[in-house]
Structure formats: C-alpha cells, structure tokens
Image (cartoon, rainbow, N blue to C red; front, side, top):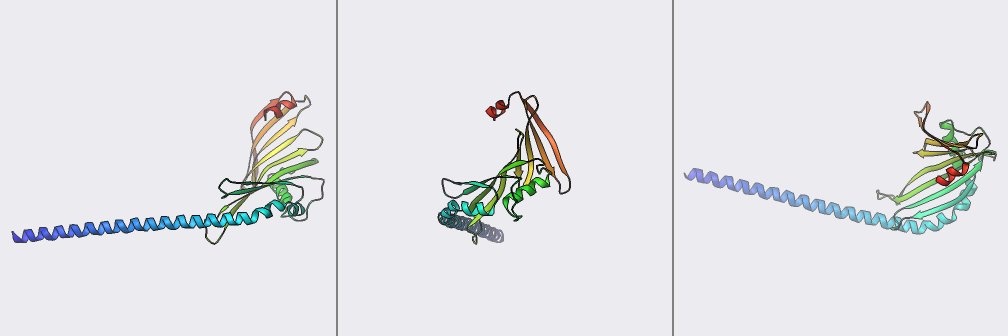
Length: 227
C-alpha cells in the first residue's frame, strides 16, 4: 500500500514538473514574440524616419531635376510629383512626347529609345510619320532592409502613337516592361470612329495579338465625349 502511495506521489510530482516546464516554454515563447514584435516595430519606425529624412533632402532635387532630365532624354515635357499624406511614399511621373522625324538620341538607354524598343518587341513601331507620347513612372517607399533607405520601382505607362495628318491613335498598356494590350482608334471614310482592343503576348520568340472588342462611333466627337 505504501508502495502504491509512493508511486502516486512520484507520478503527481512528475506531472507537476511537466506542467511547470510547459508553462516555462509558453512564457519564454511569449517573451520571444513580444521582443520580436518590439524589434520589428523599432526597425520599422527607424526605416520610416530614415525615409522621411531622405525625402525631405531629396524633394528639392526632384523638383529641379527637369532641366537635367530634358537634356538626357528626347522629348521631355513635364514632371509631376505626388507624396502620400504620411510621407512614406512618393511617385515621380515624367511625361514625354517626340516625333519619329526628330533626330534620335544615340544613347540607347534613353527613355525614348527604351519605348521604341518595347514597341519593336511586339512589332508595333509606327510605319507612318507619327508622334509618340508616354509616361515614365517611378515609385519610392521605405526599404525593408536596414542597409537601404528606400526601395524603388519603375514603369512605362500610357504609351500613345498619333499618326500624322489623321485621327488614328493607338494607346498601349504595359506590365513589367512589356506591352500587354493596345487600343486602336481609327476614322473611316464615313467619318465613323472605330475603337478596337487587343491583348498582346510575347513568349520570347512569337508575338500574338488577339482582338477582344470593337466599337463603332457615328461621330468623331461622340467617342471623346464618352471617354
């Protein structure tokens, strides 16, 4: 009987010790997560503060960089800067417009040359005398890496080709540096405007263009009034 009582006492002690061990692990885990969360919040606050200081120092340069940009890039028109209310994001949009008859920049890294290359990849370089307009968009935000102040992403948007001496216009949409769709607007002999949408895909070798929609307008002004 004494043996059974002793065994029960030992068993209870073992269970008690195990429960204490579990509670200790739970406490340690809770403390670890609390420290981890505090460290993350501190790192985020530090990253945000560094970005805001960089933005404060950089804004004067961004607003006066138009002259430099226009010298390096053919057809520079204007720059728009948008800052988020919390000053943790800023976007810079540069607008361009140039005629194919203009002397091309010898710098193949110029933005006009890059857009012409993008059009060439999907076999859309204008064959007729045209004016090309586009926007270059850059987005800045705080970096998640401590050794960097900011992260940035670039994109070309709203590429438009206007055929000289006509109402023909083509607008291209891009994704990750590739043209993925276009909208053609052409005026026929009956003065009707025809708007045709296409999806464009390129697998590295072959370009595929699939018509997705066609709409006809009976008066040229009707389209522009509805767009």
